Length: 166
Image 1: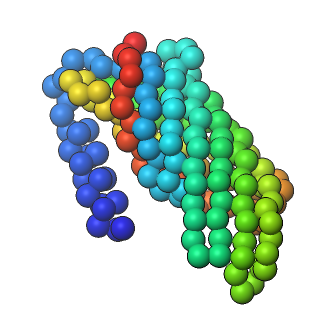
Image 2: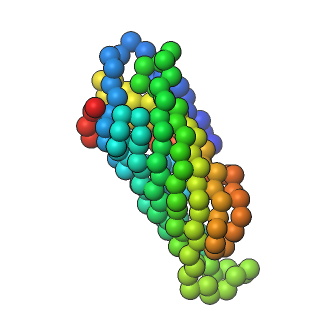
């Protein structure tokens, strides 16, 4: 998994080096968030610098599974030295539906956790190819459910197909 993540990050950095493309911002994109957890992502700009993103994820292990849904608002600020690159910050809300059946917790038929999420990341859109990449950190404060409290270990690398440009 580390080799895959490293390869994806290298491709992302190579994409950043290609600054000779024309302006190519996007309006709407759909794709995958690869990280903790893997999720389907839909991102759309409601204003030129404000994006709304929704995600749906599912994770299953032996004795443990969860599904999560979330929404966020993100403020994008261009980085002038690199076309189509912006940094963003924002906030969101996530709902986590999980169940356990292992040696530590037996037969939990299902529980709901609610998390308040922060977002800090970079967003880049290719000019001649309908692809968008982002990498972010998503610190989460779990208000309820298993694992209540602060969790700083969440973040993703996203790859999305651009549906339409601005």
